[in-house]
Length: 193
Image (cartoon, rainbow, N blue to C red; front, side):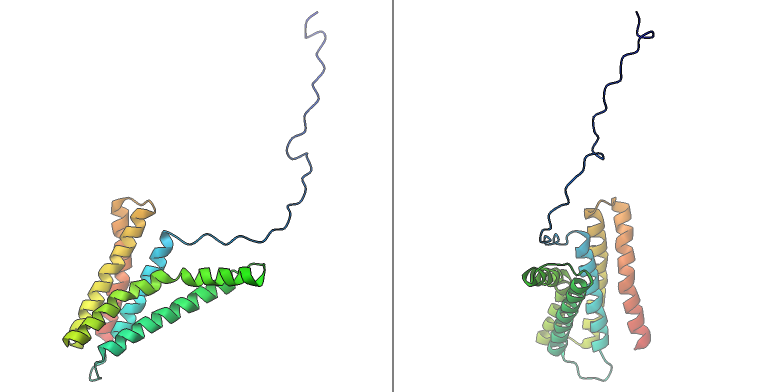
């Protein structure tokens, strides 16, 4: 006899993964989120550089007393305060359950992750400090500082774009887009003053 005359009995089906009941996962303490890397440097770098540019432009007043050491301290204090405020608000917006100790560790990590923003203001702080030591006039310092920060915005954008996988031509365009923010601050400074 052939198989067509006497078909073989079908083999019993084995249970598939969706047929097998699973036990619910045991609750565990949430792990710390991974530290931010790569593109988040761009966020902090761009934000800090724009903040430093805006403060540098605002602190340079016609007819006002020129106080570069005071201005440098205000740029640094404002950057640190903005970093703390941003880290704290990010922590509160992404609240996770867990013990008080776990929440404190998450807060400390969120605050620590703001270092690129504060670091991005340091060239402006250093420039103002040097201006105070050398007696450099406020208009020259402001012009050089805004130009330097615009170049840094270009560098932040292009560097991070290359790092996350963009081709060089696209990375340069992204750098130019970031530099446009600096150019806008320069234009606003010229129009307002």
